[in-house]
Amino acid sequence: MENVKHFNSFAEFYPYYLSEHSNSTCRRLHFVGTTLVLLIVVLTIGHGAWAWLLALPLAGYSFAWVGHFFFEKNRPATFQHPFYSLLGDFVMYRDMILGRVPF
Image (cartoon, rainbow, N blue to C red):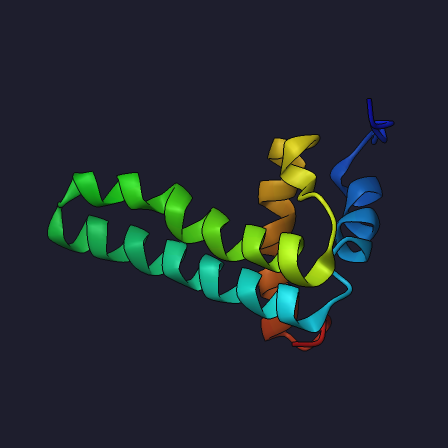
């Protein structure tokens, strides 16, 4: 079984999360998936079509997992740290928009 890293806070986790996203293609795929997730949420609220929310995991995870398995060549952090990983995705998305993390 793989060693699981333990983190006491998100601030402690985020540098690890970024290290697991060193490949630019992987980060770009995460960006596409997160953009789709946000678009689905906005459209769902705007149209009241709540069934669209079922597409959220497919939109978010499919792009991210392709990035990890084929480009980054590692296991997604979400398997060991689901909450921090989800939060990390949105923080990395923001940081990419702000230019703190390269595309």
